Length: 204
Image (cartoon, rainbow, N blue to C red; front, side, top):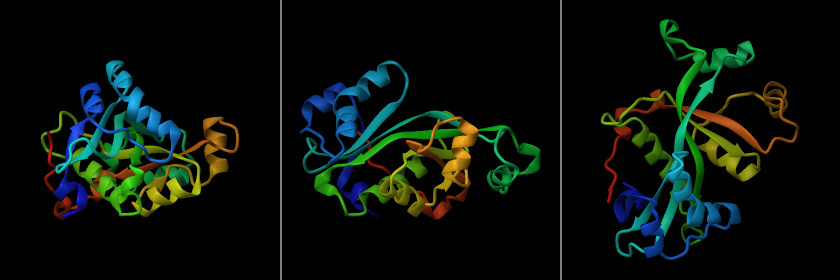
């Protein structure tokens, strides 16, 4: 199945869990601080929920973590070619200016488990969790404001995320943000998931 599904448990990242776990280090100070300190504060403010996978053999070890919140993919101001790309697989009778999306706010893998394919496995699990039948609500897209650097951009490209705007310049012009952009908005159409990708996630 995969390392996370076979050897880890999926858990809400709470103050009590953090107090019982070893410090989390992913190699990025901002992400380390968020998952070690800020995640419960954002949850208190109802801004996002953070989750993690811990080892079944040693629940004090956090293998990876991520945060989710509600968002949308806004196509109302997109250039026609880009709007058509987003709308391609959506029935004309159901097309809207703004589509519901689940936003990956932050995502990180512990440096002790890096370069083992865990990041891609984690994204696959998040995709499956987003389309589970017993979810309280539905969303069409998984979205992310990916850090505008080669490594994170390549990571999301490899995992079949698409840029909302075709170029950084185009995104800058339409969002009124100065170049160079700190992030690039990317999305994944959850309708692309197949039934074969469904899998059980150990929760605790």
